[in-house]
Each structure stands twice: as C-alpha cells, then as structure tokens.
Image 1 (cartoon, rainbow, N blue to C red):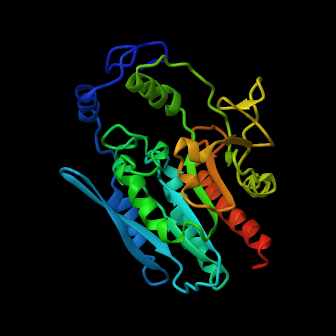
Image 2: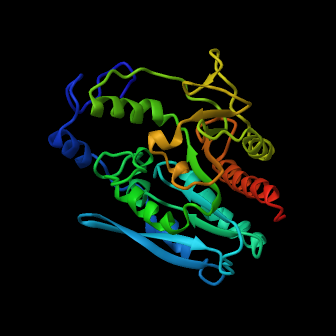
Image 3: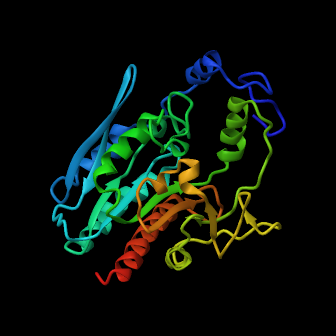
Length: 309
C-alpha cells in the first residue's frame, strides 16, 4: 500500500471490530521458522547456561514455547540484569542480537552478575514478520496488569519474583521502513484515527525513561554502538521519530504509562534500542553486532555503578 491510500481493511474513522480483526488475521502468513531460527540456537546453549520454558503462547492451531536463558552460576547476592528481544517479532536483530550476545558475551560476566535473556518474546509475530500478535495487539503497549497480550503477560510473570532486584534492563528493537509503509497505517486504521506520516530515522538510537532519565547510561551505550554502526541524527525539527532528541541518539518516552517492556521492572537503568536495518549504510550483521555492543555496554555501565567490575 502507499502512504496516501486508505488502509485496505476497515472503514476510515471507525475502529475495527471482530470482523476486521479476523480479516486482518486471515492475511497473515508464516514467512520464517521460530523453531529453525531460534529454538535450534537455544538448544546449543544448554551446556553452558540454564534454559527454562517460562510460558507458552496458544493461538489455535499454533502453540509456541517461550524460553529464557539464565546464568548457570546464579548467586543471590549478585545484581540481576534483564535482556529482552523480539517483543516485536518483525524486528529481527532484536532476536538474533540477543542470541548472539548469549553465545559471544554472556559467559564473560560469570560470577559478576546474574543475567536473564528472553530472546524472542513474540514468536507468532516473529514467524509472520509482524509487529502485532494474533489478536492485532501490540505487545509493547501491553505490559500492564491484566495484560490482554499473552506475550506480555508471560514475560511479566517471569520477572515478577525479581522485578524489584533488577539493576538494568535493555530491550532490543528496530525501527524499519515498514513502520511507515504498513504498521503505523494499520494502527491508525485499527483505532479509527487519521494516519499522519512521519520520517524513519537513518541510524541507531535509544529510548530512555522520561520518568527516570539516565543520560550518562544512555551515552555509554551510544558510544559503544557508534563503533559498530552510525547513530541517527535529529530531523529538521530536532526530533527522532516525533520526539525531541534530548542527547545524541537519545529520545525519551514515559515507559510505564505507555505499557512498554523496558519498564516491567524497577531497574534504575533501562533503555530500548532501535536499530535501522533498512539503511544503505548498515548490514544485517552490523545490526546484530550493534545490539550485542549495546547489551555489553549497558551491563558494563550498570556494574560500574555498583562496584562489580
């Protein structure tokens, strides 16, 4: 579809009902395999880390086991960090960056910090390369009590016992060209509102918590990622994707108010990464590497604040 054409489902100005959601669902097709791309990799971690099933998505006839990978040498006196990927299933480097961090970097923190990684929060959407779940809900607007999204509820249940002990949480995302060509027009149609086009930033950026901003933490992550790929500049309005740029490559959202994943714990240090995989200046390998660099820098900074380096 083009940005000036009406979305092909629903009536402009009227929110979707069950019939429109059913029509939308009928158009979603499997384009890649969670089992082949994700579960097969997780299996290779079992000799080094603890792997546990923390939930299961049931979208008849499909069923998806959800897995977390944790430090094997877990010690209660150590701080805890949380890494999440694939909350939006179509954001590929969020998933594969999390898996690469486990494989390449997680062992070097053994004995210094407890790490939990949930690399693919939304496997139904991963397979269909979509932002929403099978009920046309955005999991990353659904991290709240009595969540209507299975994906969000399962992750919240996983972290509930430790939510007040987490030192740092980094949530791995992408901003893609399809945000403007498909997902934001679909959102406007679903909610019965007018679609207003915006610019897609070319480069990596972070989303800080406006209720608890940590500028030094964010800049430490930006500095590490800048060695791997380019950082998104502000647009002519001084904004990145509609929000003021408060520091190079950083914007702020009210994470808890919006029901975003990055605020599911009480961690003092939180951030959401945003990689731009459609840039002519970046490759898929760079995008994954940027996510790995972001996770490492975030952990290193947080540990330095508690003297655990």
